[in-house]
Image (cartoon, rainbow over the protein chains, first blue to last red):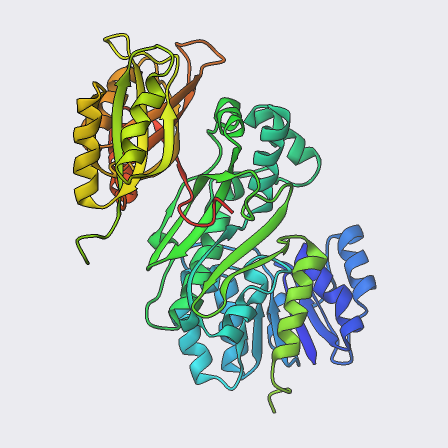
Length: 319
Length: 175
């Protein structure tokens, strides 16, 4: 397949680097200010080196990347809320050209799922977005394989940063600010950690799961989720939980048409109490009981793996 | 359902702190066909009358249960409450905030009043002193099927006092 990659951050960059290993060709890559385009395939390493050293991917215009020759647009620009732009616009351009779209950007599927599906309906291209929920963990494809109607509930730990902070606080008896600073030093937390610690990121993933589980019967956005973060949990709460064989985890739940994200008490031995940055999703199925899917929920190569798995699921190039 | 179907009951007793009292209280249960499920013996926790509260869970048919309660009373055992399994579900929540400033004992009384549940256990941690934010772990016993209702009441009481509730995960948390 010929891939155009929108977004050259950790995920977009990793997709470009790994595409060759999966027998794909990257014909274009763009960030917000520059692009590199070559119908015969760009040299990903050289282009990404140039971004590192000169701050630009190449001399082309980002808009031309969307108009270039490709079979699949990989949308990996930063997640935005509300109108989900520019990611939604990029997906629109590709679908209107009857190209496939694979999203790593959560915005369009969390905030404008109905609009996006309507565009896909009119297009010969397909939309896939495995990478938006649980990084490398095959959550959405499992839901698709089992059939959304056979899954009654989903819950999980979907934010590695929040989970790292809670597990460190519990293990070391340290306060939130201290562990946050440590997480920032380790690159586990962003300089502005709000998106992760306030629960927004986990909530977006739950909204996407809810949209997939609803299978078009109902559309969800972030506004439908009840969201609470972990930023005001004192070490004393974790200590009291520990005395009772429990701990606190930021859990997202999709059940009975409700989406809820917040810190919850769970047994220390619970499947839903992973340590460190590990993620887990638990699906309640009609005929097969409970299914646990766990693994790395974030990171460039991890998320790129999910993107490339989606590319492999697409039908042959749209003529 | 047939009349001979066994049911679960909870009997709350108060015993004098003397050797043999507990055994004397249990004999009428076994002698009258009751099946003992559990005994919760709160030693060290005296009632206002200086007696030891004991909670006994048992299974019996409704007729046999009546006989058991009569036999207990005849044997001189103080039966405080006898009824079908009253507190059959437990839930643990954490409360975080200015627990002491907002009158913790009043918070607990409100919980009892609003939920028909019982505070089975309470632990408070106030590492920064009572004037600062603290945390409490509260274990509540509630009626079968009343967990959701109890949680709603906990949320509402906590909300009035600007306390934060960390709720248990209903499903999956225990495994």
